[in-house]
Amino acid sequence: MNTYYQDNRDRIIKNSIKWQKENRIKCNEGVTRRRKQAMDKIFDYLGRECVLCKFNNIDALCFDHINNNGSANRKKFGHATLEYLYYSKHLEEAKEMLQVLCYNCNMIKEKERRRNI
Ligand SMILES: [Zn+2]
Image 1 (cartoon, protein in one colour):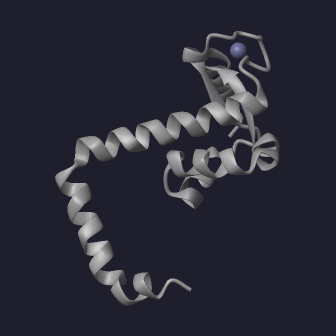
Image 2 (cartoon, rainbow, N blue to C red; image 1 turned 90 degrees about the vertical axis):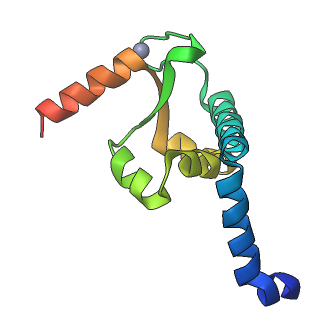
C-alpha cells in the first residue's frame, strides 16, 4: 500500500481542506466540470431525449430515478455530483436506476407521485 499517504494522512487532509478553502472558485469549477463530464457520459449511454415525449434539447433534460428513489439515493451518495460520478463509471447500473426525462415530464411525474402518497 501507499505508506507515504498513510504516514502523512492527517497532514495531507489538513492541507487539502486549507487549499480548498483558499481556492473555492477553482474548486467549484473543478466540481462543475467533473459533474458535466459524468452527466455527458450518462447521457451518451442512456440517450439524449426524453423517454416519454422525445424532447431533445439537452439544456432541458435531466435524469429521473425510475423507482422514485432519488431522495434516498442522494442521501446514500451524499451529493448528486457524487451520484453522477458513480453512475458514469457504472453505466449498466445507471440504466437500471435512471431514465432521461425533460423537465416538464419530470415535473408531471413528480406531481403525480405526490398526489398518490
Ligand atoms: Zn418529456
